[in-house]
Amino acid sequence: VTEAAIEEMKKSKELIDWDAIRDEEKRLKHDVMAHNHAFGKMCPKARGIIHLGATSCFVQDNADLILQRQALDVILKRLALTEFVFYAAHGEAISLFLEARMASRSLISTIQSHVVFSLPEGEY
Image (cartoon, rainbow, N blue to C red; front, top):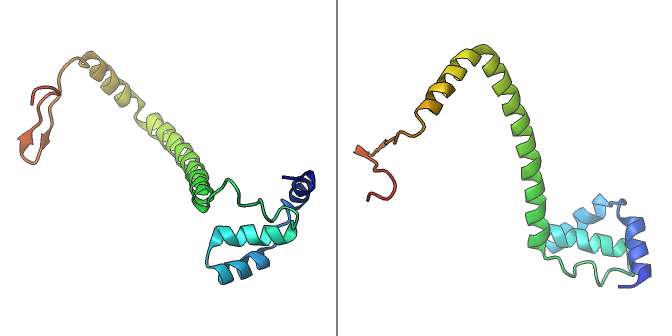
């Protein structure tokens, strides 16, 4: 990897040619490679190294994780607001329930599934 290739990529990283990417994707039928080819045209000194060390799956999976994390942040904020509003309306009842639950936390609970009561763990 040459210094010239690195400098070329640094200067071009914010210059996204969406039309070129669209054209490449139509030609290649591959979204990630379309970005690589379009970026390679903008950075000819780096064209041969752009895809090294990163598979399409690597790029796609990390993008999915970023989107999932952003969505989870939104969900958590909404849940916190919902919990705050709910607690403001039902705080005393929740406090009483939590106190009763803490007092009985050593009791074994059983549940019923498919008309059969479950056994405590280890008693099968």
